[in-house]
Amino acid sequence: MSVSPSARRLLLERTWAALGGGPLSSSAFIDTAPPVPLPARTDVASLAWASVGASALAAGALSGGRALALDPARVAVSYSSERHLLLDDEQPPVWARLSGFFRSSDGWVRTHGNYPHHAAALRRGLGLTPWADAITVAAALRGMPAAVATQAITSAGGLCVAVSRENPTLDAALRGAPLVHLRHSGAAHPRSRAGRAAEAPLRGIRVLDLTRVIAGPVATRALALLGAEVLRIDPPGLPEPEWQHLDSGHGKRSALLDLHAPHARAVFDELLASADVVVTGYRAAAMERLGLGPHQLIDRHPGLVVARLTAWGAEPAMADRRGFDSLVQAASGISWIESPDGERPGALPAQALDHSAGYLLAAGVMSAFRHQDADGGSWLVDVSLRRVAAELLGMPRSSSPEPSDPVVDPAPHLQKFDIDGITLVTTAPALAYAGGPVDYRPPRPWGRDAPTWSGRP
Image (cartoon, rainbow, N blue to C red; front, side, top):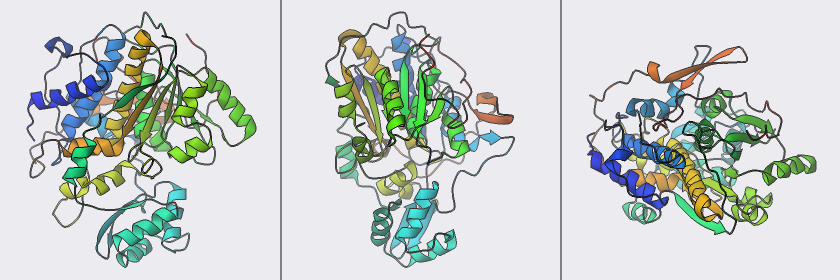
C-alpha cells in the first residue's frame, strides 16, 4: 500500500492538536522514511507510525522539544511483538484453542478464551461440560445463529461477537470525537517538574498500573521506558500468561493485591496517596464498586492523572462491555475487510488496535503533565479500541495486501534478557526521539514484587 507522507503526517498532526500540542514544523522530524508495510488492506502501518509518533512527540516535548526519530522497521517489529517473543529459544503459544473464528448457523462469530475463566464462561454459556474442547464448541456454535450465541456466551460472562460488516455511518460519527480524549477534571495546583532529562523525562513520576493483556501494559511500558516508576497491581486469583506479561512488562515492578480484602486495600490506598498517575483497563462497574472510578479517584486525590482504556468506549452503555482487540476487529468490520478469500473472516497482521491504543494513552498521560506544568489540575485521559478501529476504517486502503511488501529482518530490533535463568527475547522500543532512551529495562516476573514504591530519585 502506498500512502502519501502528508496523509500520515496529517493524522499525527490532528492527534497532536487534540492533545494541546502546537503546530509541527519540518524540524520536528528527523526521519522521512515511509512506514514499513504490515501486509493488510487497511493502512495499519500509518496508524502505527502516527500512534507511536504521538507518544514520542509528547515525551520529547517534556524535555524542551525533541525531534521525532522513529525507525519504521522497529515500529513494525514492535507491533508484531508476539511473533518474535522467545523463551529459551521457543515461541510460546499465544492463542488458546477456544479463541478464534467459528461458523454459526447464519455467519461467523469470534470468541476469546485465552484466560481460563473466560474459557469456562464460554463453555457454560453454550451449555457444555467444563472440559469441552474446540471441536465440541465449534459444533455447538454451528447450530446457533450468531446473535443467539453471542447473547448466551456474554450473559455467562464469556466473550463472543458476531463478525459484522463495517458501518461507515457509525465510524464517521465515532471519528467526530478525538482519538485521544484529554480533559481537565478538577482543580489542583501546578506541579513544577523542571529539569526533565531527555533520556528520562518521567523520572520521579509514580504510576499505578491496573491493566492487563496488551493495550494498557503497552502504555505503561512506554511510561516506564521514559523513567517513570511503574507498579503493576494484579488480583492474585487471575494470573497473567507468562509470555504476555514478559512481552510488555519491561521496566515495571509487579505485585499482587486483593483489593476486596481490607488489609490489602489499605496497602493499595497508601500507594495511591503518593501516585501521580493511575492507568486502568478494567470494566467501569468493577472499578466503581471498588471506589476506583476516575472521578472517585480524582475527587479523593486532586492533581491525579487518570488514564482509562476501554474496548468499546467510555459511554455508560458501552463501558461495561467486555472486549479485546480481536473482538473489536470482528465487530467493527475489519475482519471482513481483511478476509483472505471473501468467504472467511481474517485479521490484521498485528494486534494493531491494542498497540496503537497503548501508545495513544501514554501520549495522553504525558500531555496531561505538560498541561499540569502550566495550569495544574486533575486530568482524565480516555482511549478506546473501537475509536481506534474507526480511525483505521477511515484511512485509505488497498484492494488486497501487496505480496511485494518488504520483509523486515527483526534481529536488529530485538533485545535479550536473562529472567530467572530463562533467556527472554523481546522486541526493542518503537518509541524514539532525539536524545531519548533506546533500550528497555528488563521485565520482572509476574507478581514477584512487594506492593511498595521504591522511592523517588
